[in-house]
Image (cartoon, rainbow over all chains, first blue to last red; front, side):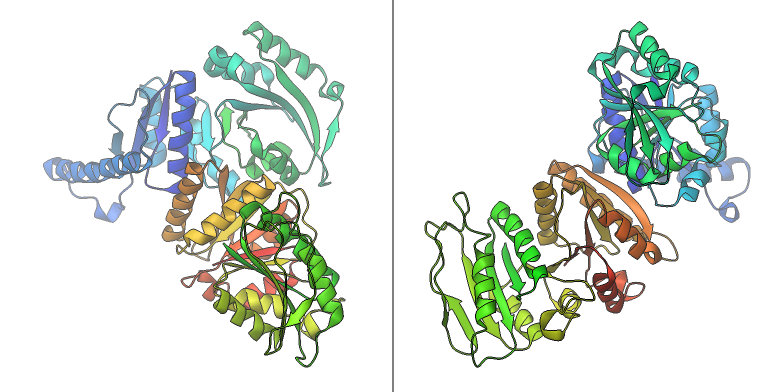
Length: 265
Length: 280
């Protein structure tokens, strides 16, 4: 298994680096650091050897930036070779890398804001819309073994569970797993509903987890505002769900969450 | 750490003393508990009784301030009255006294004289008579004191987060340690919030957030980060206060001076319906 990890010298990238390091060690996954230098079009020079030598300079600067980050964070990523640095458009280059090399996940940092629009704009970027591998959005550091499976509000568990188990199947027994069915309500006070409110979804998830080797999990149906839910989940770990395609309660919740997100396509 | 707890006879001071006692007992701070009165000709007996009662919140069997019952306050000259006895078997200092004079000047003088690291004082609602008729005292102290200031407005409850807002890159080691104490005491999650101006989050603020995050991760404190637009700070702080304590890192290089002036800091401290910790 292999993750493509986007790095640059920034706080979100630093968080992504540290979270992916934890996750990769737990899952036995290799990590490929990746960086795109996006030069100002006006500064792009000529053709032929002139361009090649200019590109070498730009790539060298990008590589230095990534190596500096790895050195500062004192992280020795498992299975990581030399960071791969390319020049071009970030969306296009990430998609090309994902197309020509087999990866199981793409990871990138995101500095959380209070505005749902910022998160929607972030996910609307072409690379996220077009890629077929799951996306890890590293917002913050949490213990890698805590995982919340977020279902309901249109989540196709037949898509989510197989994708999740492809990565986490071998470590199910090590996880502190919560299966959460979230219901939006404007009231700030959270209401914990009866498990039966989760309908057949819980049974289906439980059966798939059991088939994969079983994971004793907590099954919750919770109703409340995204903000209150985000506070409740702050000490839980990674939140895994399907990639949201429309603005709705789940998108609002994902925007408010401080947890890292794992969004399968 | 040296802590100054400023009190008067009002109910908000009792709440502040309670909060201060919890923090002091857990941090083993040296404490100065000071009652304020305006006139220096005679001791306000009601205030003296309140100071002695608040002092009792700090002492106890497992307390670093010992157990003993306090005697009365005795004149110490220049409009000062001090408590005669130290607590029995005290391992840390708990000084209790009453001082007369202008409240703002007296507090700032005490901060300098005792080299205080944290001032704690209460504030009531708008309809409550406060601080000898000067309801603005807490915000004035928060803006003028060279050390950190906690303005306590509500009884502390089981809080889940300590939200610390930053808009500059000059953060003192003392303030970092103080935040650790609040996080540990409340068993809370720490949220480091970068305040973005019109042009977004400054690079130096982002770097400072990263350094702070690394510091707390090394300390074993669970911390997370977030960005908030400075204009939305008041509403964000009000919401964050529903789930815990809100703190502001206010430094000399602070962007507060431009987008979040001293006036606005004072406004936030004054208008917030919740406790505010100003970190310096």
